[in-house]
Length: 196
Picture 1 (cartoon, rainbow, N blue to C red):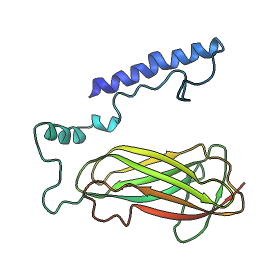
Picture 2 (picture 1 turned 30 degrees about the vertical axis):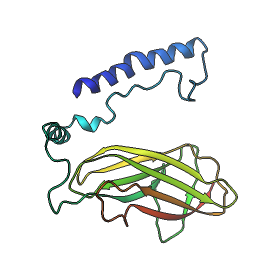
Picture 3 (picture 1 turned 30 degrees about the horizontal axis):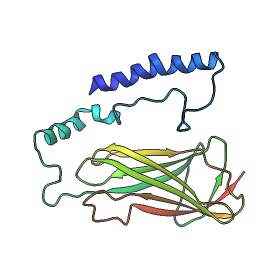
Picture 4 (picture 1 turned 120 degrees about the horizontal axis):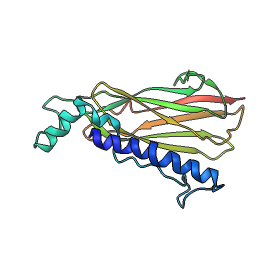
């Protein structure tokens, strides 16, 4: 696993960065066919968390035929911990309207916890901004890997201009994992008002 991680780092340092710099030097600009950068990322190892000893114990157990579900009484699940607007670090509330100051480098950070007894992987997180007068903004991200009791944060960026001064709802949903029985803490709505 360390070799796979190293291959990603070597690609990033020895190929992607120099290639991008050379294209810039030669005046080559634009995007690839999919709209991404001309020199794409190459992440063979989807999550560097897989390199940790704790993660590898579970992977090895699965390869050896160990159980992939918790023992009787074990819990499966995740929960939404917090939603913060950066760079100010403003934490959103479900009960009080929060003023969000819009900046060009604004991001919305969603923190999720593995509240069960099992490792979980590929957990979709969806963020929607619903506001009158503008189209609903929908952003998606995936948490690649998370251990029991661990918290992971995903950041959403590149938001279109909102309707300033008009109430809005930021809706966040963490998709339940297989076998999750309590889904009440997987989603929340946050009333906000955008300001400059």
